[in-house]
Length: 218
Ligand code: SF4
Ligand code: SF4
Image 1 (cartoon, rainbow, N blue to C red):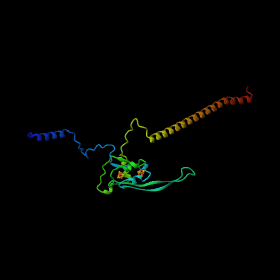
Image 2 (spheres, protein in one colour):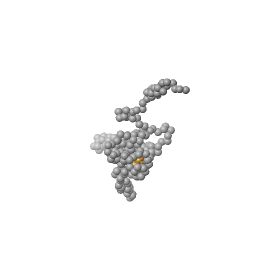
Image 3 (cartoon, rainbow, N blue to C red):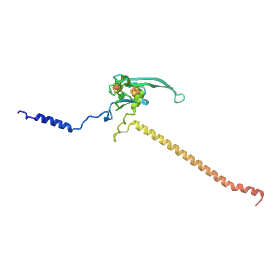
């Protein structure tokens, strides 16, 4: 059957109309910031207080773009007769984002939660060397890391939270016991003072009478 003249044009116009009524996905960046999902892999933040310089992230990075320098320090014994300990102190931690392929292995393998994804992505540079972010810059990214999602209501409490709560409860109980002991001590001291005051009052009239007796005034 031969095609109806003009049917192709009608089909094309129908497609055009359908597309015109659909919502556009174009974002007017940079005038409008894109709404990124919370787990977006933008840049890596370093929480250096958690880093023990174990070097796992640098060893596992497939691109070898994590640079870590450290030195050892001796920590004096905590108790008399105890043993001195040595610990690693971080001197340099840098990530070369010109090489990084955003695989996330370093974040996965870090046993101490020192590395986090941030959704920030606006760090393009005109000089490639500037893409090596040193420790201070990596720390700055930490402030842009979104909060972790809330736990499922039926989920088991994380062991870190349970341990922290137990420690806080223990501290609060110790403080309450100390306050109670102090209150009891203060009450006992007050009672002792009152008893002493009463004894002095009882003794006072006798002392006042004594000279009169001695003078033979009775
Ligand atoms: S995301 Fe992957 S490539 Fe980038 S620093 Fe981490 S391990 Fe290396
Ligand atoms: S794996 Fe974690 S703790 Fe170990 S060096 Fe890397 S960031 Fe630091």
